Amino acid sequence: MNAQISNGDTTKLPIMTIHDWSTGPYPARVRIALAEKNLQSRVQFVSVDLWKGEHKKPAFLAKNYSGTLPVLELDDGTLIAECTAITEYLDALDGAPVLTGRTPREKGAIHMMSKRAELELLDAISVYFHHATPGLGPDVEIYQNAEWGLRQRDKALRGMAYFDAVLKQQPFVAGAFFSMADITLIGGLIFAGLVELAVPAEYEALHAWYARMNERPSVKNRVTMSEPA
Ligand code: GTS
Image (cartoon, rainbow, N blue to C red):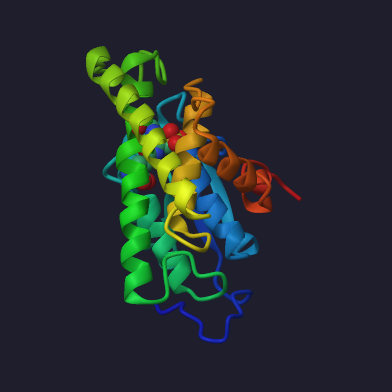
């Protein structure tokens, strides 16, 4: 199937399905991308209950081997997991704004900074949550290593310092405009909020950037996006 459109009109795209959990930090990334691309009307949501471990059951593992959310399901049954891959798919459908870069240089910079936001912050906080806190509870967290989790929490704090330094130099994570890299870092700070890992007050640039991000409708309305209108 070739769903790409070339005139910027995404309103005729077939309906896509997003399997996710409305309050999750990783699902937030795809929800924000959808809203930024004005694709809300082209998706339906299926809720997968993380707290009941539905994402580790065979029915869901058949959709995503990794047992994580979100997953994009296309009308022809194609399944795309991984937030970055889903965002790249949505971006390639056309429609403004471009989230993953227009030029080779932009694409390279955005991918690098998004990956860094994952490695240094979001994924680190996720490991902290699953290993050094009760996480999703004993039925889901079948192996925990608290020492590893605490090291990842410290890594995330170092990541906050790094992104504060980046945002002292430029208005957005990958440079002069909003991109997928900002969305990934937003996911990291959403997760930090959930696990009550406060951003140190001295990281003023990071705080100011996050306050600006929280004013964007895509960020503000991400949880309610899947509620009936
Ligand atoms: N690399 C994956 C991606 O980018 O999509 C990670 C996805 C991920 O960890 N998703 C979380 C998950 O499924 C969803 S949430 O915690 O943000 O709601 N976690 C459950 C688990 O058991 O790891």
